[in-house]
Image 1 (cartoon, protein in one colour):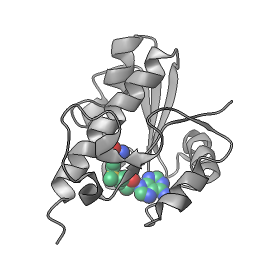
Image 2 (image 1 turned 45 degrees about the vertical axis):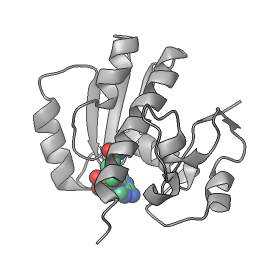
Image 3 (image 1 turned 120 degrees about the horizontal axis):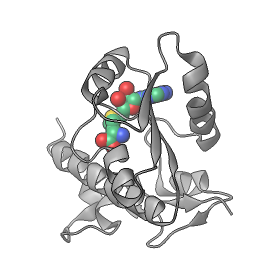
Length: 157
Ligand SMILES: C[S@@+](CC[C@H](N)C(=O)[O-])C[C@H]1O[C@@H](n2cnc3c(N)ncnc32)[C@H](O)[C@@H]1O
């Protein structure tokens, strides 16, 4: 068991929100959310569209259950699509997965040095690549390393 997992998931959502706010505030209008999981409060399209109602989001996930629920839950709102990587919507998901592959990201434990390497060729936005609880957290956390996830935002020059 990992007792910090719940808080880590919440910190991850907080980071996602802040990162999308930052991007949308800098004029980014098109988003691909790879490994989006189930839609929940503060979805990427909600945050992005707060900054810019014209923002568009494609959600990509390789779990067919997530995709089915995602479609059902998001049906009533506009400005996004759900791309099922697992079941026959390959064209729709292809773009997202190309970005995914080029980022070399996956659910594999990595050291900070390895995470930093993922950002090669990108300009890293302040505060850099830090523990997720340190990336502009609204509430300071005593032991940020306890939540064992690194966060960073990179901008392609
Ligand atoms: C931790 S969950 C969702 C996290 C969500 N992005 C958030 O910030 O709350 C990770 C999701 O990534 C999806 N996933 C894992 N590997 C993937 C892959 N290779 N392609 C697409 N989705 C993937 C899983 O199915 C899962 O729904």
